[in-house]
Image (cartoon, rainbow, N blue to C red; front, side, top):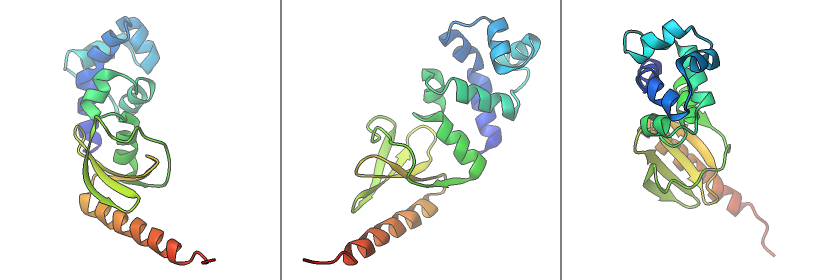
Length: 161
């Protein structure tokens, strides 16, 4: 997924997100920082949201079922991936991927999963913390190898009693 595709998904879902949250067009336009006329154009498919409006919508309505159905269980993660290309860190605790994720590979304490909606990849540990995310499967597999190797090396360095 790229920036334009994300904008298209959010633009196409804007009306449903508004209705899901029971906002009038007037209220929604104020929330997103755009004119009512522009919102109407987006909802009718005559215009697309700007990148800033799309990101704002995802950030404010990340728990929206409509957005999750379009982008996966963590729409903000998709925005981060599109923006930064990949994410490498032990960051947020996930729910383990029981609904939105397909497990591709398990190595030691780490699992490589693919989101069934957005198709991006992530690596989580046994405690379900996310360590890496990317749209590039090969890059994700390389990071999985690296994390497994680091874990093995750390295990070898522990002093024995």
